[in-house]
Amino acid sequence: MKRIEVKLALPVVAPLLDVIKELADSLRQTLAAPLEVKGLDDEFHEAWTSELLAAQNEEVRMLLALFDDEFFSEGVVAFDEGNAETIVRAAAAVRLHLREVYLKPVGDELLESGEVDLNTLDEPLRKAFMCYLFLATVQELIIQHLDESILGG
Image 1 (cartoon, rainbow, N blue to C red):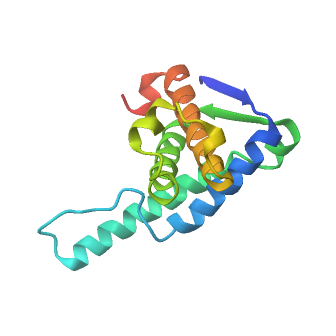
Image 2: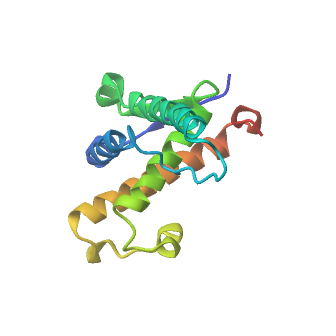
């Protein structure tokens, strides 16, 4: 089983986890990528949305579970074929929600380039942006270092 372990700096990551936890709370009732399918009856749409929401919540829970007591004692998180796909999806959901809730003023082009002057951002926006970059890095690590077959490719 292919596995990668990443050592993270606790003082840097801990404040970002607070942002993720806050967004996880707001994602409990909100899809990161809302459905806009026409022609579905209300009952079917509600059932489908409910299933997607449950899956999203479980994935975000698994993302947060990486940062357990062991992480806080050793500063290490591990990704393997058992959690890779779930963590990539959870990070995507949180990043989408970050973009909608906090990062709209930054704009998509700057977000994707990462070329934002942190000194021009107020503290909450800076923390949100750093969280956005952190989760993007987690996604990139998983995609680059684990086999495509793990991610369903």
